[in-house]
Length: 146
Image (cartoon, rainbow, N blue to C red):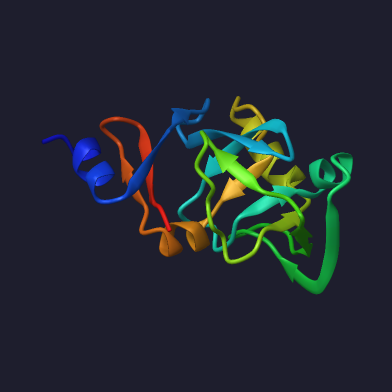
């Protein structure tokens, strides 16, 4: 039995992944009906959407009055995003909360290495809650259904 067949028999859903220009995994996503690129980041504590995209889509963002950012990155204001659902190939990830931040620094770093910008980052909050499995052999992310 293949790993895919085994995981699917255990209630996991498969999300196909692709590699960006620097070798990081990405998934195709949908946010508020718009196609987006989602970086798979096992080092990110939370799932984050681009603040400018959230505003462009007219989504409700509320400042949390705190700062956040990645390792070695600038500290940026964190917003909570409400009333929007993120989907990855028909699978709905279940983050602790959906946050929004300025992702310019992330995209600048990606661009400096020849990679295309992303509109969201899928973080450890989803991986923990849905017992994620990343299969490098098939370039797949598996998330356990509720």
